[in-house]
Image 1 (spheres, rainbow, N blue to C red):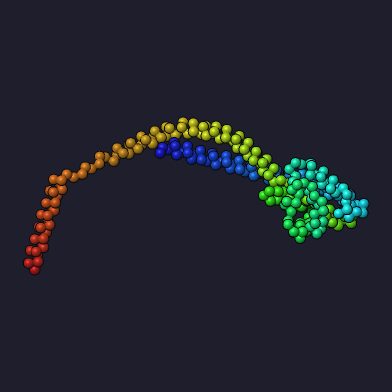
Image 2: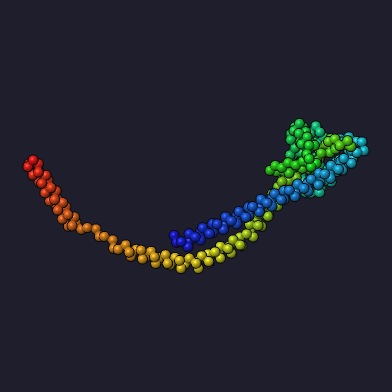
Length: 252
C-alpha cells in the first residue's frame, strides 16, 4: 500500500467525518430552534384561549357553564392543521370541553393524574405549562376566575410528527448540499497531494534502492562437501582433545 493511498484515505475519512459532524450539529440546532418556535406559537394560542375563556366567566358564570368555551376551542383547533386537539379541564382533572378527534389521546387515564397537570400549570411562573413526548407536544395555561384563582386549565396537543417531518426535510436538503463541497474538497486535496507527494515518493524509492545496495550480496548456503569436510575436521579435533585429556589423566 503506497504512501499516497494511505494519506488520501486518511484525508477522505477526516473530510467525511467533518462534514457529517457539521450536518448533525446543524440538524440538532435546527430541531431545537424549530421546537422552541412551535412552543412559542402554541403558548400564544393557549394564552388567547385562556383570555377568551376568562372573559366568558367574568360575567359570573362558573367554568362548566361558559357557553362560548366550545366555540373558543373550535376556533383555536382550526388555526393549525397539526393541532390534534384542545381541551379544558377543571381543577379536579375532569374534561369539561374538547375539540378535535384526538383531543384526549395524550391525557392521563385518571382524573387524579390530570389534576396533577393542573397543579403544575397553576404553579408555572411564566403563566404557561408545556410537556413533550415522542408523539406530541403539549402546551397549556391555567384559567383564572375574577378573583385570580385558578379554576381550569386549557391544554393544546400538537402532533410531534409534523416537527419531525420538517426537520427531516432540512436534514435531507442540507446533506445533499454538503455533498458538493465534499466532492470538490476531496478532489482538490487529492490533486495537491499528488503534486506534493509524488516527488517525495520517488525520492523514498531511490533511498530504498541505495540502502539495499549497501547490504551486499546475501551469503550463499554452504555446499554438502563443505559441510562434510567441516564435520570431519570437527571429529578429528574432538578425538585429539579426548586423547589429550586421557594422557593428562594418566600422567597424574
